[in-house]
Image (cartoon, rainbow, N blue to C red; front, side, top):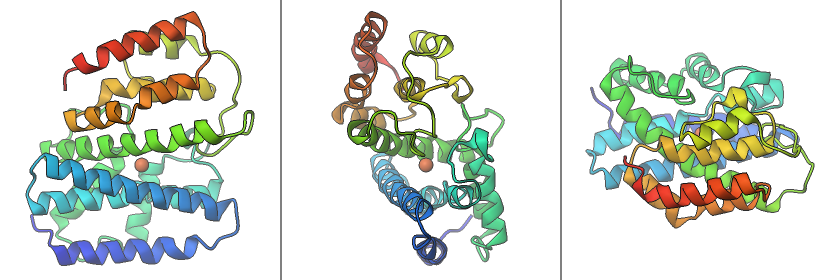
Length: 262
Ligand SMILES: [Fe+2]
């Protein structure tokens, strides 16, 4: 398997050539393209830092960077076509990504083994859990990508919760209604230290708890340290209703986080 610096430069240029003109589209499209372009850049930075921490070879780190760069490529056609980032209301953005990579020949000229590794990672990156049936190198790439991705989504959503106006539906919160209360299944998943399934998410509070539940789905201690350092759990709970149940949950998770083994 070969993936050189020159290969990375080629696909990185193709990414820019595709995305840059889309930024000019009239709002709301342009600003949502920018949101995902900037998210991609930060996921790429996170993945690079994580690869340094993991002491991966330069080639492995480049492959991880390429996966980070392209993981959400499907978000661009998704927003243009459907005006939403909610997969349930449009199409699976991971699979849209695989389609657009094929249509636009983004991976033309790459070692076919690298292209299929990247496509497998992109196709599976947003699943609830990483399937055991995937080959080891795909699973490793997904572990890096998913941690890098989650860390930046936490950045984006906590900024959004801090600054958003109450009652305004937004593409960041998947156009979910900002209604009171929390769904029973969502609460149960977090209590039982399980990942919240997006299918159970009914409102913005549920969506916040889904992000809380990510503490149970981190792959590397590096990511957990960043999550603690940036205090994302506090930021999420600050924007959840102040009920005894949620207060208890917050203190339990905060006490547990350092014991969650990775
Ligand atoms: Fe992402």
